[in-house]
Image 1 (tube, rainbow, N blue to C red):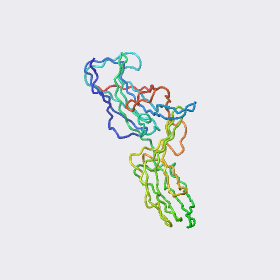
Image 2 (spheres, rainbow, N blue to C red):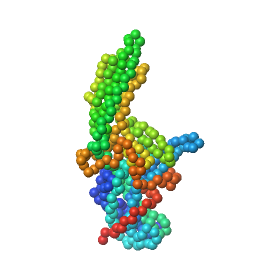
Image 3 (cartoon, rainbow, N blue to C red):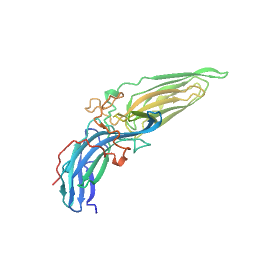
Image 4 (cartoon, rainbow, N blue to C red):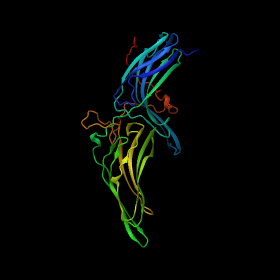
Length: 358
């Protein structure tokens, strides 16, 4: 039987590259009916979902795969017909139905794991569903991107990190002993992509050995959770080298700021299934000795506004519990759905009446 619904599109008015929580999204669902069509209803669903897949030990101690899924929020609008029962006729021709909704507060930012984007993600979308009397349906999904409100000038990020001082003594045969010292601190804890991170400190080499390299590494720490299990992964995002330190020399770390890479995902602390945090790690390589290290937790934000702004950060370095108003749907999927259909989940209905344009 020929398909009667053609050119089904979800069109967003003044579409943006990304949206913040509490933003309003408006638009139209448009389509062409090639002939008269009988439907049970036409619905529009906007939702967000988090999914994870990890390997961890089960109760018997064996390594197993665990999957989980969490509906962050879901809103549903019936454009034509009623939720249950009854049918409605759609006449032949072009049709357009307007919609408008306001996003909830405190949504985690859109995220995809680099290695498993289909199985580990936070994603959002607007889906139009044509439900027909015989149980079949037509669907159209339009993904959109969320950036959580993380203002790097928020007072909760105004504290200065504590300086770190590390020292090791090394000895070279017949040449006596000496020390290698690392003094390090960063100017602040919160940054935007492409911002310079000013590093305050130095490496002093009072030994007879050459320090072959001093490096700074930006690390992303991914803590994924599934069915009461967790898996921790650390990924290097960027590194910078200060070069060698010859015996008797001192290098000043302030001469070379660390630039936060572009297109880096923001910190996520407000999602039940994952935490995404960042750290700047210092490494001083000591040949035939104990390497010197220092680590500073940092926040990757999404905006920069004055502290007296009405916009405030929704996360802090110390996350609180139960910040999401979603549902855990663990077990409702045999496996996490693919990215193109992640918005399909169990229904959490928030009714809203809307009429088609004349």
